[in-house]
Structure formats: C-alpha cells, structure tokens
Length: 383
Image (cartoon, rainbow, N blue to C red; front, top):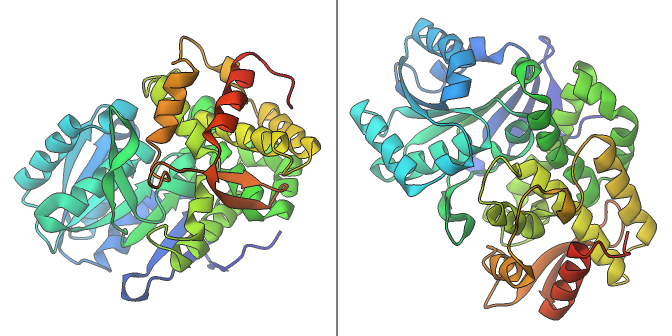
C-alpha cells in the first residue's frame, strides 16, 4: 500500500516531514542510520556538544556506534546512562540526567540525543525541555514502539505515583532517526509491544491499513520491506495529526485510543515488567472496542476482529491476561480519573463506531465504565 506523505530516497531510506512552521523536522526511517547519525546531526548543529541519554541495555549494543559517528562528524558526545525500564521515568532519575547533562556542559546551542526506547525518549526529551529552560534534542528510537509513536510529536515526561505521564512538557525534537536495523536485536516481547501502536493507526482512521496488517503482520515481524512500510505508514499518520494539532486540543487525542484503560492497568501493575506499555495499550484497545460494542456504538464483530488480530500476534487482550494482583474496580476507576484527558472530572475516552472509525467521546458515564470493568474482571460475556 502507498505510504502517505512519504518520500523514498535513492538509498532506500524513507523520509517524512512533520510540518510545524519554523519548528518542522524530518523523520528518517531505514537501516544503518545509527552510523549516519553524526553526519545528519552535524548538518543541523556543527561542532555541538551532544549529551547522549540512554539506558544500560541499549548502551551495551549501540552507544559505541553512535559515539563513533558523532566524533567522526566533529561533534563532542558525552553519555548519561540510566537503568532500563519504566521506573526510570521518575523525579530521581530526571535529576540524575539533568546533573549529567550539566556536568557535560550542554548549553543552549548544544543538543540532547535520546538513544533508546520510549522511556529514554520521554525522559531525555523532558530533561531537554527543562535544561537551561530548553535545549534542542534529537530522537534516535531503538524500539518499534518508540519508532512508530513516542519519538514523534514532542510529548515528553515522567510518571507520578498518581499515574503515567502526568508530569511533562510538549518539546519537539529537531530530528528523528529511526534505524530499522536495530529492531533485529529487539526481544520478541518488546517488538510485539510496539506492534500494538502500529495496529492503533489502522484502528483510528485507516481501516485499509488494519486489513493490510491482518495479512502482512508476519512479514512485519520478519523484517524487510513490510516492516519499513508499516513503520513509515504509522509515522506518516502521526506526523499528519501532530501537524494539525500539536498540543492535543483537538483530534490528536485520537492517538490515545486504548490508552485510558491501558494507562490505568499499567499504573495498577506498578509500571513493571508484568505489563509493558504496548501490552497495556493492546488490552486497552480491545477494551475500547468491547466497551463501544456494549454501548451499541459498533458491531460486536468489530470488537471480536480487533481482539482476534491482537491475539494472533501474541498480545494480551483482557485484564485476566495480566499476571499478579491488580487494584479492584474502585482502584482502577481512581486511576482512570487521573488520566490527562479528564476535564473537570468528566471522563473522556476514545471509542469507535467501527474499525478505522474512532472518535473522542466526552462525558462518558462513569457508572457505565464501572459496570464494564466489573464484567471484564469477571470474564464477562461481551466480545
């Protein structure tokens, strides 16, 4: 299927543009980009110091390649390494990162480079937004989830005990380099987690893409042209939304399909390895469609189809799929009430009239949500 708003370069690298006026930037997608990072960044900021924020696991595999590339281009890299996992999105680790960047003498004309998955991208981006009241940063996402979602659009932040991503800032990168070759080393569970965000773009407003994924998902997992096409299609979809609605005052909220339920479950699981972000989104998307069906908004067959595809790729689709204990229904409702889309106490969900027909539903009845969650926890009869 054709890639919307994409330009295929002679080197088989795909390039997209996020149009934000004088803050517009490119998303570059393809293999071998880590080794090209220095040249591409130096073209934007020649001679800059670059604070590389990464986690220990990514550093072991990819930090050397990036540092060598930066030095070869006349840039001055300094790594700041954090522990992997969602718990690094905290005040304590943010302080550690900021201290490291200040020690590296990163100034306003220098750069922060986020080398890692969504956790590192969110953390490094927020640090860049806060450092000296704002320095530029580059996203170099190394997970599928980060390449198709969190690296694009400028949402940065950390978690609170009250919920996920409640503290942060909109701070756009100046460049996104998505090296598809690094995904070959990604554990299968991490790749599946990222795939949930790929499927999301079909479920929001691109039914033909979802149908294509139903046919091609094994090729996406296997690598090659289908993987690049899926990533580029996802990034093009997000770039178009961000260009229209940077600060999520309108239809950018559609990108949160599955996230209201999912973030509550993720917080309930303690932001732990029990439930990865993409796994939580997968359950949340299946729940959003089941809830929509229960409210008579979409056909039960659509909810069944969504769950069937997510199950086929190995993703969870129900609360019962989460190992260990979770908060009770009251506890989950409290977590949902902390969601960023809540406005003056009114619940907002992204619901669906069908596959590719998602919409923003405001003032959703909390009693209906509570009843739905109780049925979910009891293994209810809905799809």
